[in-house]
Amino acid sequence: MSVADPVAPAQVAAPGAADPRRHDGAVHAAIFAGLVVVLAAAPFLAYPVFVMRVMCFALFASAFNLLLGYGGLLSFGHAAYFGLASYVCAHAARSWGVDPALAILLGTLASGALGAVFGAVAIRRQGIYFSMITLALAQIVYFASLQAPFTGGEDGIQGVPRGKLFGAIDLASDATLYVVAAAIFVAGLLVIYRIVHSPFGQVLRAIRENENRALSLGYRVDRYRLAVFVMSAALAGLAGSTKAIVFQLASLTDVHWTMSGEVVLMTLIGGMGTMFGPTVGALVFTALEFYLSSIGSWVTVVEGGVFVVCVLAFREGIVGVLARRLRRPL
Image (cartoon, rainbow, N blue to C red):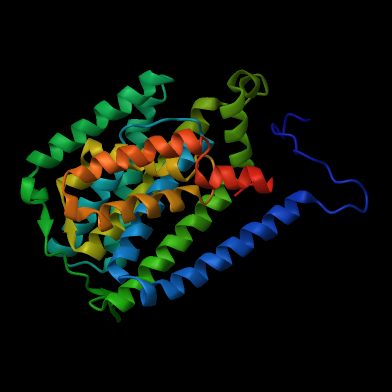
């Protein structure tokens, strides 16, 4: 293994043999194609707004998984980026009357910038100290959101106009908005897939598995950690911005610490360190909240029970167990 390639290939195909990595790529391509088919059929089988909610949280969980599953960094404050983007996007769309695409972009950039600032502070520590720093910083964002005049305090920003995308595509229709939300979701997953399967992603795995070895090979670990932190924050912001347009609302719930806990549960239930696990976890979690809403606060008890069962029965997450049995990364 050379210095330029810190992660040796798992297997080197013999002459004339099929490269297993190519097969994995074909499997992932088939899964993405199947996902597109499912998304195309979903509005006819379920309430479109519910499916859009699942996609927003699936993208959020996938962004978090990029940091935890591939970067090895457990953040307890990822709601800060999701919520900030929601506020910025909602304010830009409602008060400034900007195009929905620009509003979503502004929210994403704001979260990326916040991630750069918070990440520069948090990565100075590791383990539980890193997690506690991210939680403390996220609480600062929460209380700032509670007091800032443009956020609406406890009322949040309501009545966010969906507007016309690029000045031509009216998003007032749920059907049209669904197509846009699905495109953002799939594009976000593809970006994460590209990051994970790039040389940058290989270095992240090397750092996660053996930091000292990566340091000995000459890699600046802190720079890679900061980079993945910013990427994860920006993608979480993309999810939060999309959610603000879909539900025409930005509230304190988006930036509360419980949201950070929920995204951790989604990731662990679906499968940490898997490409499609967070999507499955978000689907399970959102479905529980939606279909059990009639039992009120007991929903959290049920969610806790489901989480315990999943951890005991599927220690690698639903998709993680499936990937192990198929012997293919999913």
